[in-house]
Image 1 (cartoon, helix red, strand yellow):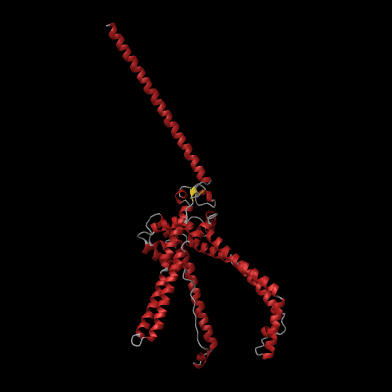
Image 2 (spheres, rainbow, N blue to C red; image 1 turned 30 degrees about the vertical axis):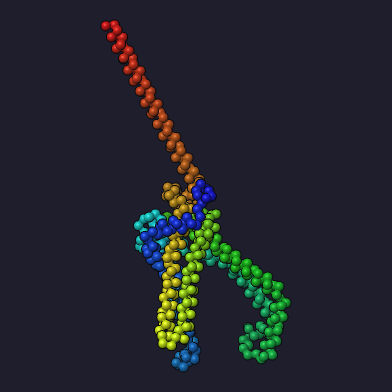
Length: 413
């Protein structure tokens, strides 16, 4: 293993093994915690309402299509708003509580489901601010994509607006055109695009660079602030901004290691997807073959449909133990790089990572103080030993003189 700043740099297998050790006899508890986290903190994703109602059906029912469209749009908007509010106002402290749950697993403490709800009273406002700031930071990583997309769209629209008749068709509200006009317009569009192909390709290249840049930036920035919630959960007395700065300082030079740790679980993800697709293929084949079975074809088709439902549910719920495993490994990674045993003794929290990273300034100061204390104790022990030796020598000398005097008295008598 390599040495870095006075502590050993471990590979991904070390943290996976530590995670399995953490989860020993705690798997169901960890899976339940992950389920609540995803349910309350928005891990499943946004809730959407899709309403497909034929316009003729609405008219035949004697209703106003515009009213129905606005009504269903209002329902979808209300559901999305409630979901967002739940994920933000409830999910933020729950995410913080989940980090406390992970820390208790690491420390072999009393990890409980109740840990997820322990920060509603401790630092509720800080959890909301941290979630808001983290979201804004991650949103800012999308700026390269937005800029590239805007440039590409601007070049493309500029080229199309130079086509005779296109502006009137799009902006003038002209709906019906003849076939000759359509063919002429298509030829003009192709000609204009061909003349501007260089600029359009350049803008598209800028867009691709922006997309790749956003992906890389999102990974780097996301991993730099990955442990902000865990730091705030462990040290609730600090501010949300200090938690972000501490995470960024702690993860300096360690982004690649965390990326490799998470990427090492790719095999589990592929196995999960492969098992689902394999089961889906088998059930699909059996469903097709059931058509050629004269007697029990309907029963086989029904069983295949039921099997498909069960396989889909199993595929969805298989995410929970896998996510618990990944989160435990990441918590073990944080426990290692933060050197939490020394952190509890140092003047943490601080935006200076040397306060808790082994080999740093604070650690060196503590080492020097310990060495000085050891030297003082050694000097005191040495002095005491010398005094005791001197005292013993004096007593031996006095005893020898006493014996000599007794011998002289004996000889005289």
